[in-house]
Length: 184
Image (cartoon, rainbow, N blue to C red; front, top):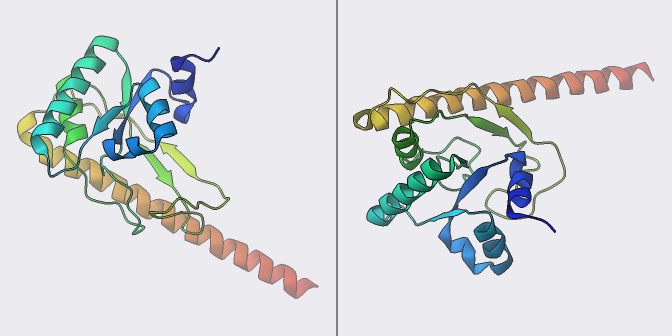
């Protein structure tokens, strides 16, 4: 028998971790059932700030009580431009409320395999970078916007570095292939 804890551990390999997901995905019944079994926190759109505050406050209480971690995207949605999107404040309010560190995970998805806003991903390699934890115990709610922007700036830097590295590796592959073609 598979337990909820085992299912949760499989998701990104993060044990004792819950997730935030837009509530609208519950219309996909199999996903909704799995997400509910995993203890997912369902959010609402930005145009419902009172509901969002209530959802994040309830999530903070649950996480404080259980000692679990949470995985969420501070962008709040998929961004298909190839850039780092604007960050929402919710994740940062949550971290401040819990005095919990933020462990940034940067995902480098090559453009040729990125499905964008669709669901048709193509085969390839996605690199996941676990960055150093960011302490939040001294953060204050009054400074949440500054903290949100500072963390976003780190993601923008990591994104630029990953893309520069990928372009460099592509140039090296092109040179290697060209040199091999000339030798034959």
